[in-house]
Image 1 (spheres, rainbow, N blue to C red):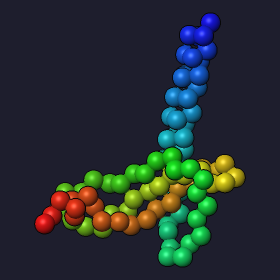
Image 2 (image 1 turned 90 degrees about the vertical axis):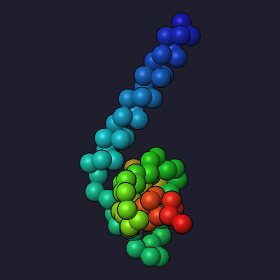
Image 3 (image 1 turned 180 degrees about the horizontal axis):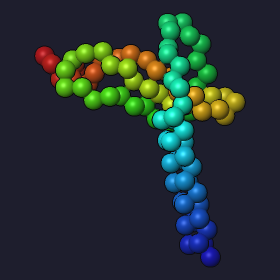
Length: 86
């Protein structure tokens, strides 16, 4: 009985995670502007595009606000290739 409950809970968690990921990919990202007041209760995912060059890339953060709504925020950052340069 405990194994069945554990399996059901795991399956529900995986399903929820997959649906949040699909929602985040389809949601329109709000661009970050300096001074924007953010209401972030929990970060769900941060997606940074890979780049072989040191350049500015647009990253996306998917998060849940204090009302429980899933939001996506787009912001600019240096690619990871920049940290590898001396």
